[in-house]
Image (cartoon, rainbow, N blue to C red; front, top):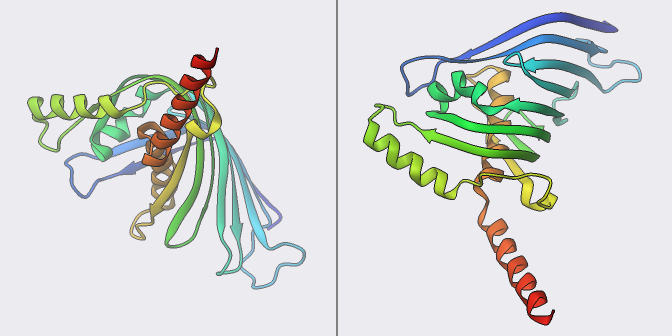
Length: 226
Protein backbone atom coordinates (compact mmCIF):
# COMPACT_ATOMS: atom_id res chain seq x y z
CA UNK A 1 0.00 0.00 0.00
CA UNK A 2 1.57 3.27 -1.07
CA UNK A 3 -0.15 5.55 1.46
CA UNK A 4 -2.66 5.41 4.28
CA UNK A 5 -4.06 8.68 5.65
CA UNK A 6 -5.91 9.47 8.85
CA UNK A 7 -7.69 12.82 8.68
CA UNK A 8 -9.03 14.88 11.59
CA UNK A 9 -9.50 11.91 13.87
CA UNK A 10 -9.15 11.15 17.59
CA UNK A 11 -7.38 8.47 19.61
CA UNK A 12 -8.09 7.73 23.27
CA UNK A 13 -5.58 5.49 25.03
CA UNK A 14 -6.75 4.01 28.33
CA UNK A 15 -4.57 2.00 30.71
CA UNK A 16 -5.51 0.09 33.84
CA UNK A 17 -2.48 -0.12 36.16
CA UNK A 18 -1.43 -3.40 37.77
CA UNK A 19 -1.37 -1.75 41.20
CA UNK A 20 -4.32 0.61 41.17
CA UNK A 21 -8.08 0.93 41.24
CA UNK A 22 -9.00 3.14 38.30
CA UNK A 23 -7.85 3.45 34.68
CA UNK A 24 -5.97 6.46 33.38
CA UNK A 25 -6.37 7.91 29.91
CA UNK A 26 -4.80 10.31 27.44
CA UNK A 27 -6.35 11.71 24.27
CA UNK A 28 -4.88 12.75 20.92
CA UNK A 29 -7.33 15.05 19.14
CA UNK A 30 -7.38 16.63 15.68
CA UNK A 31 -5.14 13.76 14.64
CA UNK A 32 -3.75 13.79 11.10
CA UNK A 33 -1.34 11.07 10.03
CA UNK A 34 0.26 9.58 6.94
CA UNK A 35 1.68 6.06 6.74
CA UNK A 36 3.84 5.45 3.66
CA UNK A 37 4.98 2.20 2.00
CA UNK A 38 3.05 -0.37 4.02
CA UNK A 39 3.67 -3.99 3.06
CA UNK A 40 3.56 -7.54 4.44
CA UNK A 41 6.07 -8.88 1.91
CA UNK A 42 9.63 -9.85 2.78
CA UNK A 43 11.13 -7.68 0.05
CA UNK A 44 9.68 -4.32 -0.88
CA UNK A 45 11.45 -2.65 -3.82
CA UNK A 46 13.54 0.41 -2.90
CA UNK A 47 12.26 0.68 0.70
CA UNK A 48 13.46 -0.88 3.94
CA UNK A 49 10.81 0.56 6.21
CA UNK A 50 7.42 2.19 6.51
CA UNK A 51 7.21 5.76 7.82
CA UNK A 52 4.44 7.15 9.99
CA UNK A 53 4.15 10.95 10.33
CA UNK A 54 1.52 12.35 12.66
CA UNK A 55 0.36 15.62 14.21
CA UNK A 56 -2.17 15.95 16.99
CA UNK A 57 -3.24 17.97 20.02
CA UNK A 58 -2.50 16.15 23.29
CA UNK A 59 -5.56 16.35 25.56
CA UNK A 60 -6.96 18.79 23.01
CA UNK A 61 -4.24 21.41 23.63
CA UNK A 62 -0.47 20.85 23.23
CA UNK A 63 0.63 20.40 19.62
CA UNK A 64 2.47 17.12 19.02
CA UNK A 65 4.43 16.39 15.84
CA UNK A 66 6.00 12.93 15.58
CA UNK A 67 7.64 10.63 13.06
CA UNK A 68 8.05 6.87 13.45
CA UNK A 69 10.32 4.58 11.42
CA UNK A 70 8.86 1.08 11.14
CA UNK A 71 11.46 -1.26 9.59
CA UNK A 72 10.59 -4.48 7.80
CA UNK A 73 13.61 -6.49 8.98
CA UNK A 74 13.35 -8.15 12.39
CA UNK A 75 16.91 -7.15 13.26
CA UNK A 76 16.36 -3.47 12.48
CA UNK A 77 15.70 -0.86 15.15
CA UNK A 78 12.55 1.26 15.33
CA UNK A 79 12.77 5.01 15.89
CA UNK A 80 10.46 7.71 17.26
CA UNK A 81 11.22 11.42 17.11
CA UNK A 82 9.33 14.66 17.34
CA UNK A 83 8.27 17.44 19.66
CA UNK A 84 5.48 18.93 21.78
CA UNK A 85 4.89 22.69 22.12
CA UNK A 86 2.94 24.96 24.49
CA UNK A 87 1.33 22.53 26.89
CA UNK A 88 0.02 22.99 30.44
CA UNK A 89 1.29 19.90 32.23
CA UNK A 90 -1.65 19.57 34.63
CA UNK A 91 -3.68 18.35 31.66
CA UNK A 92 -1.83 15.02 31.95
CA UNK A 93 -3.38 14.35 35.36
CA UNK A 94 -6.09 11.97 34.02
CA UNK A 95 -3.35 9.46 33.22
CA UNK A 96 -0.71 10.43 35.79
CA UNK A 97 -2.96 10.21 38.86
CA UNK A 98 -4.14 6.65 38.29
CA UNK A 99 -1.15 5.17 36.47
CA UNK A 100 1.89 6.97 37.92
CA UNK A 101 0.31 8.03 41.26
CA UNK A 102 1.20 11.69 40.91
CA UNK A 103 -0.56 14.87 39.87
CA UNK A 104 0.77 18.12 38.45
CA UNK A 105 -0.36 21.22 40.35
CA UNK A 106 1.49 23.70 38.13
CA UNK A 107 3.89 23.76 35.24
CA UNK A 108 4.11 24.72 31.60
CA UNK A 109 5.95 22.79 28.93
CA UNK A 110 7.25 25.31 26.42
CA UNK A 111 8.89 22.68 24.24
CA UNK A 112 9.89 19.03 24.41
CA UNK A 113 12.02 17.36 21.73
CA UNK A 114 12.46 13.59 21.78
CA UNK A 115 14.41 11.05 19.77
CA UNK A 116 14.69 7.42 20.81
CA UNK A 117 15.27 4.00 19.27
CA UNK A 118 13.37 0.96 20.42
CA UNK A 119 13.27 -2.80 19.89
CA UNK A 120 10.89 -5.47 21.12
CA UNK A 121 12.77 -5.37 24.44
CA UNK A 122 14.02 -1.86 25.26
CA UNK A 123 13.94 1.83 24.33
CA UNK A 124 16.97 4.13 24.48
CA UNK A 125 17.39 7.76 23.51
CA UNK A 126 17.16 11.36 24.69
CA UNK A 127 14.72 14.17 25.36
CA UNK A 128 15.42 17.89 25.54
CA UNK A 129 13.04 19.83 27.77
CA UNK A 130 12.06 23.45 28.23
CA UNK A 131 9.58 23.89 31.07
CA UNK A 132 8.88 26.26 33.95
CA UNK A 133 7.14 26.41 37.34
CA UNK A 134 6.78 22.64 37.67
CA UNK A 135 5.27 21.35 40.90
CA UNK A 136 3.72 17.96 41.57
CA UNK A 137 1.87 16.05 44.26
CA UNK A 138 3.11 12.52 44.79
CA UNK A 139 0.28 10.18 45.66
CA UNK A 140 0.28 6.91 47.56
CA UNK A 141 -1.84 4.00 46.45
CA UNK A 142 -3.97 4.32 49.59
CA UNK A 143 -4.27 8.13 49.17
CA UNK A 144 -3.24 8.75 52.77
CA UNK A 145 -3.12 12.60 53.22
CA UNK A 146 -0.08 12.60 55.55
CA UNK A 147 1.92 10.19 53.40
CA UNK A 148 0.99 12.12 50.26
CA UNK A 149 2.14 15.39 51.83
CA UNK A 150 5.47 13.90 52.90
CA UNK A 151 6.14 12.29 49.52
CA UNK A 152 5.22 15.52 47.71
CA UNK A 153 7.60 17.51 49.91
CA UNK A 154 10.48 15.11 49.22
CA UNK A 155 9.84 14.97 45.47
CA UNK A 156 9.51 18.75 45.07
CA UNK A 157 12.71 19.24 47.07
CA UNK A 158 14.76 17.31 44.47
CA UNK A 159 12.63 18.28 41.48
CA UNK A 160 14.01 20.96 39.17
CA UNK A 161 11.24 23.55 39.04
CA UNK A 162 12.52 25.34 35.94
CA UNK A 163 14.46 24.12 32.93
CA UNK A 164 14.21 26.89 30.36
CA UNK A 165 16.46 27.96 27.51
CA UNK A 166 18.53 29.92 30.03
CA UNK A 167 20.17 26.59 30.87
CA UNK A 168 22.52 24.94 28.39
CA UNK A 169 21.25 21.87 26.54
CA UNK A 170 23.23 19.36 28.57
CA UNK A 171 21.48 20.42 31.76
CA UNK A 172 18.07 20.15 30.06
CA UNK A 173 18.70 16.77 28.43
CA UNK A 174 17.17 13.58 29.81
CA UNK A 175 17.89 9.93 29.07
CA UNK A 176 15.22 7.59 27.72
CA UNK A 177 15.56 4.10 29.22
CA UNK A 178 12.57 1.81 29.40
CA UNK A 179 12.05 -1.97 29.26
CA UNK A 180 9.04 -2.93 27.22
CA UNK A 181 6.10 -4.70 28.81
CA UNK A 182 5.04 -6.96 25.95
CA UNK A 183 1.57 -7.37 27.45
CA UNK A 184 0.84 -3.69 26.84
CA UNK A 185 -0.09 -1.78 23.70
CA UNK A 186 2.46 0.20 21.67
CA UNK A 187 1.03 3.44 23.11
CA UNK A 188 2.16 2.27 26.56
CA UNK A 189 5.68 1.68 25.21
CA UNK A 190 5.90 5.09 23.54
CA UNK A 191 4.38 6.99 26.46
CA UNK A 192 6.44 5.33 29.22
CA UNK A 193 9.65 5.72 27.19
CA UNK A 194 8.96 9.43 26.84
CA UNK A 195 8.11 9.82 30.53
CA UNK A 196 11.35 8.09 31.53
CA UNK A 197 13.30 10.77 29.66
CA UNK A 198 11.31 13.62 31.22
CA UNK A 199 11.83 12.14 34.69
CA UNK A 200 15.56 11.79 34.05
CA UNK A 201 15.84 15.47 33.18
CA UNK A 202 13.54 16.81 35.90
CA UNK A 203 15.24 14.88 38.71
CA UNK A 204 18.82 15.30 37.45
CA UNK A 205 21.20 12.35 37.37
CA UNK A 206 24.27 12.24 39.66
CA UNK A 207 26.45 12.97 36.64
CA UNK A 208 24.48 16.16 35.91
CA UNK A 209 24.78 17.24 39.53
CA UNK A 210 28.54 16.70 39.39
CA UNK A 211 28.73 18.75 36.19
CA UNK A 212 26.71 21.52 37.87
CA UNK A 213 29.10 21.56 40.84
CA UNK A 214 32.11 21.80 38.54
CA UNK A 215 30.46 24.63 36.62
CA UNK A 216 29.72 26.48 39.86
CA UNK A 217 33.35 26.12 40.91
CA UNK A 218 34.51 27.56 37.59
CA UNK A 219 32.09 30.48 37.94
CA UNK A 220 33.34 31.18 41.48
CA UNK A 221 36.93 31.23 40.26
CA UNK A 222 36.02 33.63 37.46
CA UNK A 223 34.26 35.95 39.93
CA UNK A 224 37.30 35.94 42.23
CA UNK A 225 39.60 36.80 39.33
CA UNK A 226 37.37 39.72 38.34
